[in-house]
Length: 315
Length: 304
Image (cartoon, rainbow over all chains, first blue to last red; front, side, top):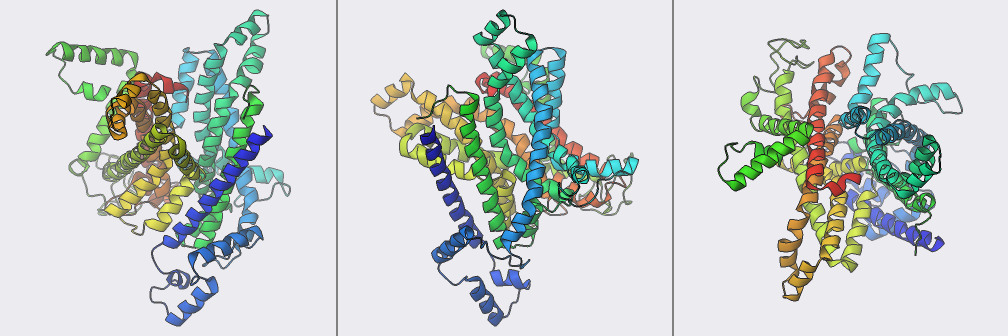
């Protein structure tokens, strides 16, 4: 097991290394002169340009720039934005709590909706309830999250004059206000994920409930609830966790859209603003940060299989 | 498949035709929702192809009353910039579906190629392909698309390069799924005896892949492609909505229409509901169609 974890860790580090090179190269492939972007004029003064290129170290060979940048990452110097002129690391660390809370809340919404639906659907297979729930989930899989999010801002405001408080308050500062600011975007984000999770829960449950040990559990007189939840659900969790790992990226990507709709100062709005203003050091920093998070999550998902199914032994 | 069969004459012309017609009737009975969804998909594609003829007005024309509610003259209302929403949605289907199909075509080709290489050659090739896919999976999909578009799509308006970059950015997102499924299928087919027979007769790998492997993995490829169309349409809408899509008054996409009118949604419900419904109907139809197709062509994929 520990050997397996060590190997997976090495692989993850390798993948992150390749990602960092890819991102670094791609940013330098962008057409257009950096100094025109920085000065925001098409006809930049040659002398100013030279000063800027010098300051940003753009005249050095790409390999040197890369090593310097990566070295900087490890000692906490993540560069400065061309446009914002702000320290990339401070910008990112300031915005992490919001994005983490948003993804956690939407995960909670997604699981709370998906697992009961999936279990009920499987237990009542091919009944009218199963049919309705399946149509419902495939229906809300087709609703764009950003559209739902915007509707959730606009219509309560129009009909009942209700709108959640603007901006972001830290949780420990004022928990209620904090939750009120985040529950709508989290719901819009989680709903799409819940649809696919519910479908996977259903099919995994169907598979598990057909197995011998479930029949045995029933035969020895366990209550149906215990059979379904303890014997069925726990064993049906592997595909659900796999899908969740695969979909976590979708969730992270979704924060870009929903944070911008709800005007939340998180990582999503940071990268969107940076992309739109062509502030590449910021784009690079946030993209690498997202990739690091996602690769770590995928690693954890892989390792968690062993917890859900002790039969899995890694060599 | 069902939709193609539907266009054939029902009159029996020969034993083969008759059995196809019978199979079609059986599918219609067994999967009424899937067949209906397939019909809507075909309709949507026809609308997109004939949009220029069907649209009553030019999408960029601004000679209409501002934010007029849906009425006989303006079936879906007019927007805050004096334009006819019905015409814009019809023309918009070209962009939304076009990029949806373009992205799936690109993603399916890339994924199939990688999956074939990894599954057939195994060993080193498999390792390199798998690592490459992990690199792609290391990015949140929408962030990857955003990143690619921000660097490579220099043209904001409607043009071939911007269309291709949009399709590529979204296609790249769906590549790993396709590649993994193809790889798995190829691995299981490669172990079968007829591949061994072909190899022992001295057939070149390219011939074995083209003649023996590819035809046998077509079913999962078709299924996964049809399921991904809905996601691609959603991704295009989201990217257009946050302002990195194709921005061109005479070539609006549904996501762009939502972005254009966002500030006025509270004042006029049809601004948000109409393009939103267009997206949802298209995505729902492709999802239901893909689901039915999966059940018919490849029931093994059900659990994944």
